[in-house]
Length: 125
Length: 350
Image: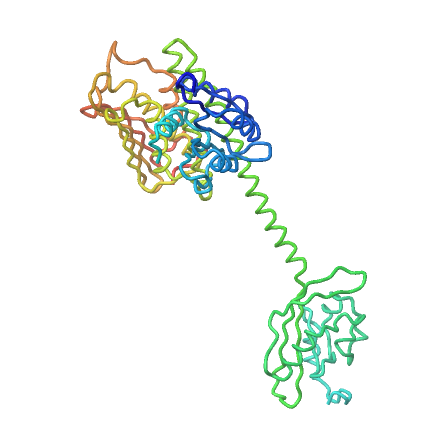
């Protein structure tokens, strides 16, 4: 991390929600990267080694949804923290890797920022 | 006995009962020759009635009733050791759709124990089964569709909430930011109902968990110091229709925003209470605070959009608003009495 700021990768197929999430992360003092699907996210994770946390949607086009993506990340890059949001309110947190946080959509920006702050500070769960 | 011709005559009344049965019915000898068949049987399975009497079951029609399993069960039934209950067979005929049948058979008990005769009832359940399958498919499709709609609604609300929050972060004017935050709270308030509904039974929203979720969401975004200001929810077991819950949620949202903005200018500690209870069709909603109390004259805030929303929604719910001094603080009570309705066309709380 060249500037000491945590790097957050946002994975979201809706451009407006993604743009706003980027703005939220930047105003909370993080560096935000963006991907429109799981494949783009994996390409980014492979190309750089400074990503601290992935904030992903669940329902997305492409080969993987957000749940599969979060398991893939947990296996391949275990230190990367995970925050998952979905429009399906009754998603089983049990279907996500241990230690990841889940938020139903529409989420409150403050709640997401708080959760990310805690995860990055290593106080999660 | 099976080599002998049928030597006995059946009572004409027995034959008449069989022939006129609504349910397809066969009357058989011990060795499975047909004594009589109901008209309904002949019609349902396209068998010429005149060809039936005396003919073995296995030779009816084009021989489609020659089913080893059925013959064996009928033999067991005739010997008295069992009876056929709801035995399912597939009747296959060339050039026709296979029919799924349910067969019930038993010996005729008419006091003549020397001569065994069987009655065999046949029900065609092909269409019923197909309908049940269709219904199952429809129920499954509907569940998928509802999930899809809920997902879309959540995503659309997320887009609105995201845009409002981003705009709020972007504007310079404190007043404009306040308005955008309030708009965001209103969207989140409606979103909470949506979330409650997706896990609810029959479109009812349980108010305790809804108001709790609502107060947590308002607190998370409006209360900077949780040790200073708190929101307490006291709600009974009430559940209301979705549209009533949206109105109640928006009223609570406006009153809580108002209290957080005006009630505690310099207080070291403050508490906001959300109370709801119902008895039959009557209900009372109260949002109270222990802040500075009602401001009058110059200091009183001008009625804004929030006040307008509360007035309009309370009127729509046939609720009477009462604002009172709570010593300390302010209490806003909205009472609905089933007898005092002004407009006729809206659902009441239950």
